[in-house]
Length: 390
Ligand SMILES: Cc1cc2nc3c(=O)[nH]c(=O)nc-3n(C[C@H](O)[C@H](O)[C@H](O)COP(=O)(O)OP(=O)(O)OC[C@H]3O[C@@H](n4cnc5c(N)ncnc54)[C@H](O)[C@@H]3O)c2cc1C
Image 1 (cartoon, rainbow, N blue to C red):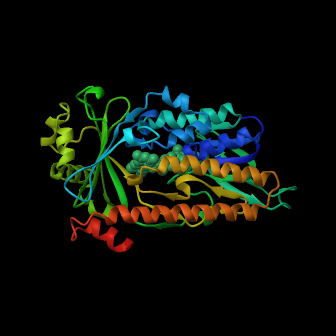
Image 2 (image 1 turned 45 degrees about the vertical axis):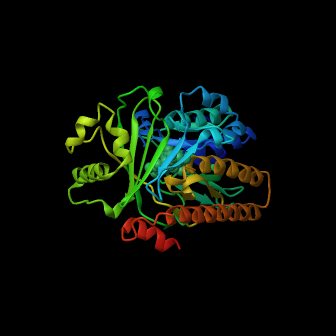
């Protein structure tokens, strides 16, 4: 590490943090991007995520579209959903002006964003984590107010100072006490299995399949590199916990066997079919928090937040990554204006109004999507969403 004094310290190197770092570094500010390094395997196996087609414009604006095209992400020709009726609703990317959505290699995608930030001049710190951040008043800082933060890895503690703190910790712990309390809309979780593909990708349907069932909904899609992701989304309290991970696996399998379309789709994957008769899962079953929430604040004295650190959306929306990219760019513009001496209060209020409007729209959309499913009026999962949201 060189000089430990920055204009902006950004905590979290996902899409929101990396995009904020890129934007600010391009404006010439001294930026430190703190990234808690994760092994490729753990991120790659996150769940299998899809980037919406409209992100093409966002990546173009960031100067990353041509790199994206070379990185082996798999185009998705469309979506087929068994949602509010037994007949499928099909959406073909041929009719989308932006072209296909993309099944992305999430590790590579995030890595490219951080790489671009580093090329633009940001200092990207892998492996150090933020352990403490205190805002010093102008008097205590012997100059302008700033943040005094401690970064740590196994061997050392590194003190840094920064004029502005950007919180982009995703669903992780919020480093600023008043920003973290969350208003949760639900307790959605994703139970994700990665299943080795038995057929070459080119010979199978590569669309996203979504299937509603009385207990929740299934998402299945190929991922770059071969395996398929088969994820069941339900509420945390619907999963029997008493038998630990075996109980979760058994629940996943019961739900899988009770599905109509998802089971049909996956059954032909030769390496998976024999395992259906046992409780043994194909590789580890991963459990992800996927609840929709809104943090208590998106800014405060000397700090702003971006991406999932502000609000997290249901994976059904397929908009989380795009939202994080846009939110990171938006915060970069706001912080740039503040660092130039703009009226921080007014800039932050504008940002908060935009967050409010975007989140309000998300909540209305979420309500409308879930509200369409009236097939199981007595099922707890759907009753919660239709009653609570109406
Ligand atoms: C099961 C599931 C499926 C999803 N599917 C999709 C999908 O198909 N399409 C889509 O668009 N979105 C999807 N999403 C949403 C998407 O993953 C998120 O919206 C997106 O990753 C948010 O980006 P972010 O940068 O805000 O946070 P993240 O991507 O979570 O990045 C935050 C980073 O900060 C790091 N961090 C946290 N705390 C610290 C700390 N103290 N110090 C240093 N680093 C720290 C974390 O390790 C992480 O790398 C899904 C989410 C879930 C849970």
